[in-house]
Image 1 (cartoon, helix red, strand yellow):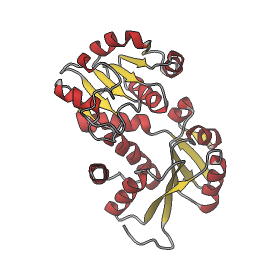
Image 2 (cartoon, one colour):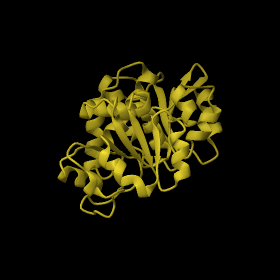
Image 3 (tube, rainbow, N blue to C red):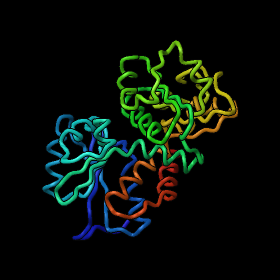
Image 4 (cartoon, one colour):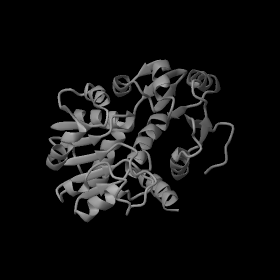
Length: 284
């Protein structure tokens, strides 16, 4: 990474807690790879202080923010302008400072579909999809799949009311599935996405940490787990045994960051270098 200068541009991730974030590694790797005079840091912003952080962004001329929990909704409410996805989701994970006017983006959905295309060569158009979970990541992924022509996006969540809220974002293809009816939809789908935290931190051999009965997985399935600690979750380990194509959350993490990188700098992100850096860190 280049030594900071008087003209160094600053970007940062804001959240609480934020110490664990891999975003500084991703973005500083990208800046170094392209020789850009930028630096990226992590800023611990207490819950309820998002508006003050945005004010400081304007005052200090910070070029970009990545936004993580618990600030995504508060930032969405306080930005000067929102993209279509950010407005629909009412959540922002990337802010661009355009001469003091703050534009809120949500790059998660595009990051997910970009990861599908790059890592698996998969186009969601016409696919029957199952999304497990109904939180922010699940909503972003479901919306992105719907906008890219998925034939069906089934939302499976323990709380049906939460699943209904997610499905309302893309009603033309959404199906709300009660947990007791999940087996039929999982068996018959093309793409399974775990957008819950189940399996995070678990050992691959620990079959208890899976979100559904993995006996339902067939070789024709593609199984994506957005968890990336560990790189191979119990769900992915089981899917690999059963012959399915699999992908973990590293590619989505990298591609959503790559979109933000381009929005801030105007340069295409060096995705291979970013992916290699974060994968190496997670293996270590």
